[in-house]
Length: 542
Image 1: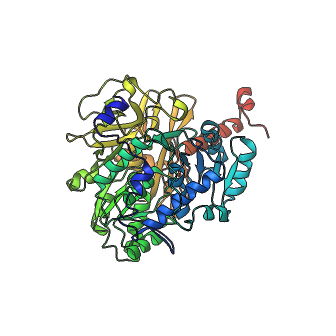
Image 2: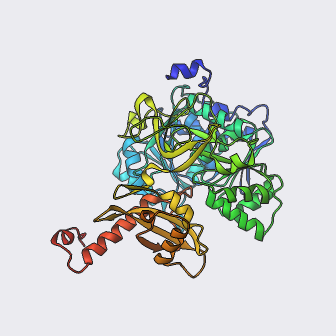
Image 3: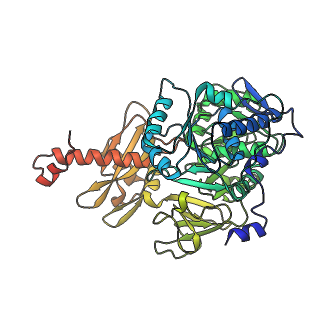
């Protein structure tokens, strides 16, 4: 289907993201729009700040359609600057604050932003110094926005600033970034008309209205909290946004109680921390209506505990920055909510489940999910279509192994690239991880492929013990055997760690784990007695 079809069907409308989000500036002028720590902005104040910032950006020499890389924590400046850039026709490139030069260089090389917006230097990291190094490396970067200058840029001007409207609905509103778990982050261009359709569809199935209070607990530079429906969807409906500066459970639950939060989006790891914190230090969370969980698989027992112990509706969310969003519905039966990841929010989004040859699998069978429709991109930035990213007919290949139930709900089984091929036997890592987490002395587990001279790939289990006494490899293999696991699925190696590495939004960083384990295996091979000359030549230079 084409963009003209999406427009004719009414899925894409002639509207800009900034106008949709700030449409209540007059009707709700004095109502609080956003809260961050002790700072509050009304709808009138937020709109004035956005208009003022858009005018000042032009004064700094920024011109449409030059993008600007925005790498800020959850602050009012992040929200104001992002909307101002969209209003000025300079698409923000939303980058997680955890990204470093290795990840940002390919993004800058592809998108060629004219400016960088970064947080102040902290004890954890010096973002301004990194930005200055990047500016020296890339001639496209002319401007650095940081500290007091950034805050002054986003302050409402006296009087009514002239409104800058440069972008058209079909222009790029912003660039999201892919997660980077399988390679360097890729720019994901979202036009105004396409992204507003995503915001509207996600908001409707999330039950947002003027009484909604949305807590942004995870980084707003991630699409889940930004516009799926997140901060932008809440403002578009006249609700109030609360920006959490830290994701820890105690801080977030304090904000739920203080601000009477109704909606929040979390990854499963954070949701589990909420349960523990609320059990040990109860707060008044009776305002909470909807808790959205996405980014990783949520086990059914935790889903049911969240609904019961927090007395709210749990809404599983499956989606991607590339477009598709699936939600369980707020009136779905408990079993659907606990065991599936929902169905598309937007009309017109198509799903196909296919085998390795791209053929549709029988109903209920497991295969890779392909999708296309008004929510989903047809190429990455600069019209890039990486090999394997798109299939025939313009379908986007998600890389996720799923099956569909009788109602069309998606049940995520694993990642295509998370399947270990051990001498031709395919081992879904997620299946083993679920079994390992059932061991009484395992707190968290990840399974990744490691190089093997005979099998090609072998199974490595990476385990975080639940207490001081970690199980050994034999115990885990015996446990898995007792659970009925096939012999070829049993781990060949065990690594015990204090914590699993994660990406900025809490997903287990499988790419990093694979690199670490491969390096360990290579080092052991080089140092083994009787290592060959070929092994020795692979030793890294000092």
